[in-house]
Amino acid sequence: DVKVTQSSRYLVKRTGEKVFLECVQDMDHENMFWYRQDPGLGLRLIYFSYDVKMKEKGDIPEGYSVSREKKERFSLILESASTNQTSMYLCASSRLSDSLGYTFGSGTRLTVV
Amino acid sequence: SQELEQSPQSLIVQEGKNLTINCTSSKTLYGLYWYKQKYGEGLIFLMMLQKGGEEKSHEKITAKLDEKKQQSSLHITASQPSHAGIYLCGADLQGAQKLVFGQGTRLTINP
Image (cartoon, rainbow over all chains, first blue to last red; front, side):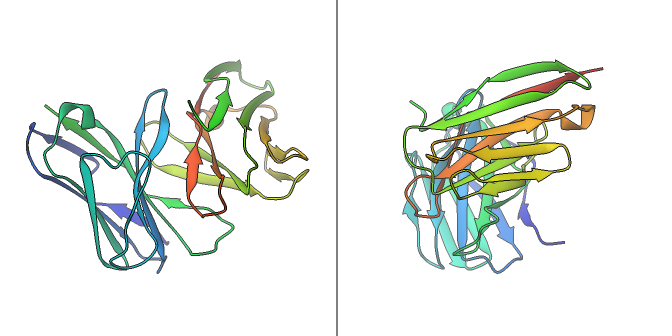
């Protein structure tokens, strides 16, 4: 069963901490994405990557960075966590040209206190 | 403002009733995707529409993309408790394989 795996379902971190959210896919997909989901706002794109060591800013990159050292792994980094980064974070992957859209992970609910 | 507008934002229907969720864009939709999300979980792909006038069905769920490719509707026939969840439309607005999403519609099915 192909899938996208996010390392943690729930995380609680303190303000100012550096936070790593990990995402691994086993489908050999070229594209990987990080979204955050907030009530009333839907999913908003933070960063995405079309290839290893490639990264592109999405709509709300401020306060975040990413790393893609291997094709299957895409990490989201909160350099200094703040309370307004409390959210549900969703990772997704897709083929370069794929009519089936994205495959999503189960999400990580991050709370920053 | 949202590039994709979904309506309604929430919907409560009696089990067995039909319902429709709409997704509207001011831009041409290169690809329109419907996803379902169970509360607190990831998104499950339902179907994808590309051509104007296209219609696809899976079990009791039908999705349509209008001729101008700027609006899509998701219709559920004879709703069941298993249909409850959040429905999101996602679209490629630039042909860049990067999806934007609507704010979601929360569907509750009452027995």
